[in-house]
Amino acid sequence: MVIIDKYDALILGAGAAGLMCAAEASKRGRRVALLERAERIGEKILISGGGRCNFTNIYSTSDNFTSGNPHFAKSALARYTPADFIALVEKHHIPYHEKTLGQLFCDRAASDIIGMLQGECDAGGVKIFLNSDIREVSHASEFVVRSGETEFHAPVLIIATGGLSIPKMGATAFGYDLAAKFGLKIRQTKPALVPFVLNIKDQKDYCDLAGISAKVIVGCAGHSFEEAMLITHRGLSGPAILQASSYWRSGEPIYIDLAPGQDVTATIREAKVRNASTAQAALQTFLPTRLSGRWLDLNWLNHNSASQWTNQALEDLERRIHHWTLVPLGTEGYQKAEVTAGGVDTDELSAKTMESRKVPGLFFIGEVVDVTGHLGGHNFQWAWASGVAAGRAL
Image (cartoon, rainbow, N blue to C red; front, side, top):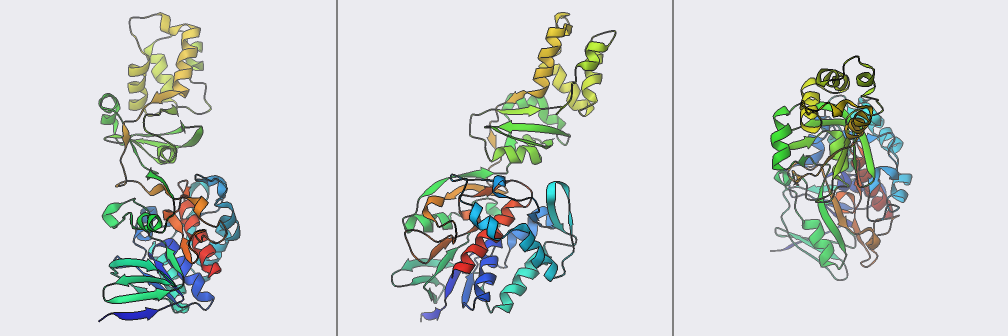
């Protein structure tokens, strides 16, 4: 026997965007059903920020996002700012702190943010259905979502099912498939904020140094990021690398400045004796000893050549230090990607409400949309802002 359950709005996905949208819509008196396929809400929130949830960034603006339409996110981000979310956190008496570059984290645990969102939903009477195995989604005079023996009916359907990152936590292409079913365009997806895998030669040359990190500038496709780089067992990671990965395309090079803002070879030029020892001492001032020695051996030192110590040659060394070029073999994929780039084409949606231009009452929010934030709380801010934009439109 099929059970018919009617609501004002159905939301698929109880992650950051879905929970925020549900809470906001319920404040406006809407009867909301929130369907989640997992056993609990906010799975990715719980693991974010090392379990402390980097819930926003105080400096977050539209400049911290990439999209096929770089202007799309401006409206939602301007109407729900980091200060707005911070006010909500403080309303619930959640202690937090700032780390580098404006990143805000919970003092205790990410579960504080889950509890806050749950409380906001409970206050508005949101009905949350966990372990929802959605069998069918259809639309005629209204939207119908079939889950188990229940048919959920509503004039509004919000898709907040996330992207493809971290499939072990249940990530699927469900949201993209629904968008395609309703005739919306999808921009090609790819892993973003993800470590690089180096080619076999570079792995042999550098990956035995796994665990060594350095502050560098990583450039890719006209964008650059000055943060830490970490050598891994298969390639490169760390904040600077993750940031660059969102802009990288297969086969393209990345450029690494190993000593930002420094004149490394100045001490070599001034030394009484110019040799490998003075070069290594100069580079060790800015890089970990093992990395500086390895890099010089592989990229510069020719122990039988006196010509490498001329002023002209040292100018070339300086250039190489600030413009080390590598071509990654690939990335670690969705398994280790923090987010998914690409998704539902923003040309298909209203920038103010997140509603489909083709199908009235159909909304897409959060990671499923082609809006990808930089590392450091920006993707959560997009989840909150896009969720609020849709919630206020209902």
